[in-house]
Amino acid sequence: MNRRTQGLMVGITGLALTLTACGGGTGGGGSDAAGDSGSKVKEIKLVAAEYSDKTAGFWSSFAKTYQEKTGIKLDVQVVSWDDIDQTSSTMIQNGNPPDILNLNAYASYAKDGLLYSSDDVLSADVKSDLLPNFVQSGTYEGKLYGMPDLSSARALFYNKTLFKKANIAAPPTTWDEFEADAKKIAALGDGTIGYDEPLGPEEAQAEFSIWMFNNGGNWKTDGKWTINSSQNVATLEFLKKLADEKVTQNNPGKTNRTDGAFADFAGGKSGMVVGFSPLAAQLDEAKKVDYGVAPMPSNTGSAPKSYGVTDYLMAFKKDGNADAIKAFYDLYYQPDQVNTFIKTEGFLPVTKTGVEKFSSDASLKVYLDTLTGVQLTPTDDPKWDTIKLAVQQSIGKAVASGGDPKAVLDDLQKQAESGS
Image (tube, rainbow, N blue to C red):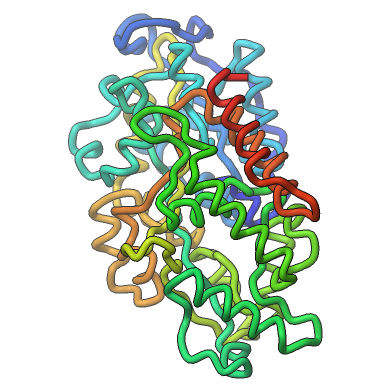
């Protein structure tokens, strides 16, 4: 969940990068728990992604509780989403990974044999409570390596005031209705945007995914990459058409979600945008936009689909640290911990008990109704990291003037098949 959503650069600094795990190296093979032999650790390290200015406070409190319960110190380093990929990669390349890493990709590390599977460090009760689609997204070659920490699901946000001015009675349910509504809103003038389309590098893969899924497409089908399928080409052509018809903001291929599309919608400038629960929290706090949330319009005549995201808490193999990591997971997945974190950050649950807990929140209904069936990107494929970056860097070019959606998707397909 490329959580540059908050755009914050705050982090916990001054924390030691050295680990006290005996042996210090990363284990390479087998599913045996490295913690079953050798001396036990007195300290483990967590490198956590920063979702908001509240992230550090949660982990600080968690670390205190963890040490009280286990006698083991939890050294926490919170890193902004702008920096965490580079920070964690450098640590791992230097042979000094954290014991636990909170990130949005795990499969390449699982492929290299660096991670514990759930068989080693996750209790059966915890695993059985995880939502099946998130277990699937965290599974590589039959074993769960990416333990989900929180989730989000996307939906269509619409400005009720602009809808009323444009004489639109209800949010669109088909792509034809969507295009017509976007034109009506853009026709209001004064710089009003029909639909804010963020295909810039921040999270272009998310924007494209939700439209792709609602046109019957996917990144992979039956285990094979299908990036340039006819459905996906048609989807990108539709997004380009919206830009060509000037119902979107200027330069959608260079617009990011957080400081672009979300800012426009929060400022009352745009009629529609794909958003999620943290945007709703921002809008509710500001109280400047009268908005509604609806399922995405579908182009297939079938039920609308939502794009889902989960991030992961993965555990690196080190001599003697398995018991400490298992204790970390046992504590984190206690309802009073995981659900507190999710509520604090404004996201969605990853457990069945969490769905039950949040089901009474009417503002989350549109997301929770689709959460168990959301479609996700193929994070279980080690190639996805490379493809995601390529999508972020190139797909916006397809919707620019003179852009060629099929050529862009053909190139991405070649990269996926070659692994380059």
